Length: 401
Image 1 (tube, rainbow, N blue to C red):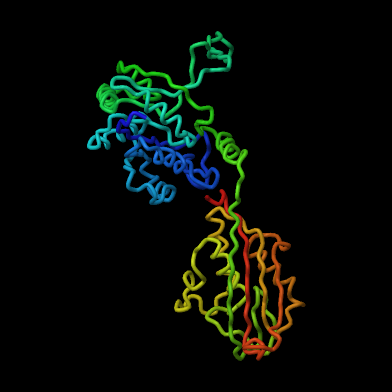
Image 2: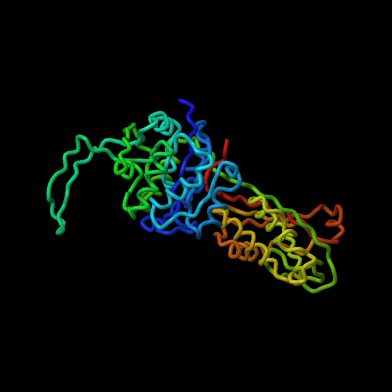
């Protein structure tokens, strides 16, 4: 590395219609390997020793999902700007935010190329001179055909000197900004990449070797291929999380107890702010634990009168939805009821079915057990019931090193 001060422009304002819209939004925010595409892209440059500031051009509607995707880990290194109607305009607006920094070299990169590696970035930076840019590219290996308006082959294009352009494309900062400003003043907004604009502006551009893995995620199939790329050949440690929950409620005068979503006739009831379903309360805590999301009291405070007498299935469904919102899948749950009475065995299947329905999983993934306390302690004295719950959830991605 030659030590030149280098900034980066990430173009991330597109809508990505060709890849389809996922639940996460445009394709730059889609998850691959459990992480947003744009986060992977930004991290690739943030970790490179030559890179200082990173200016990101985003769509005005994407501020919230951008913050959620990136988090706070890169906050000191990022400048965020609203992009324009075209890629070219978004790049120009991002370049303008770097005027105070005045880097020697600037790299312009597509947000949806998340696999630019350290060596590729170094090749581009090293090839940028005082008056020339650098473009990573790969020779064209396929035979190219030009077709006419009727879809018939018009001619075969010689491929011996043809290359497929990639990003990041590097340039002397002042020269690239000046070229963008001149093009904007002349109403020229038709350049498909910065190398084309540089060619128009008379800036020489040197080809450096690109990378076959530096793919651009354009179509839905590209995103599937990226998932395969991330999983291929890795000693993956799947992100399996286990959560535990414990709860206890005392008996009070009444005529039934509610356990694991099932009403059981009994000479007493359980005392609690909701329906006091000790099994579901423990299960709620177990599910919340897999998300590190606190306990049931955080989400449903006992001081809130809305939950007076409420069905505890509300709490379980809320916790399960939190798991799903984070991309998690509930693998199985296990609830153990600790009581001297009532008898649990006759109601076990009904309980398992009720919890399976709340969680949206198969009943054979729900276990309900019961044990006595051998007449010891408050349970042995028949003063109340305790419950222990365990939930296993598989989240996307893998356990980080």
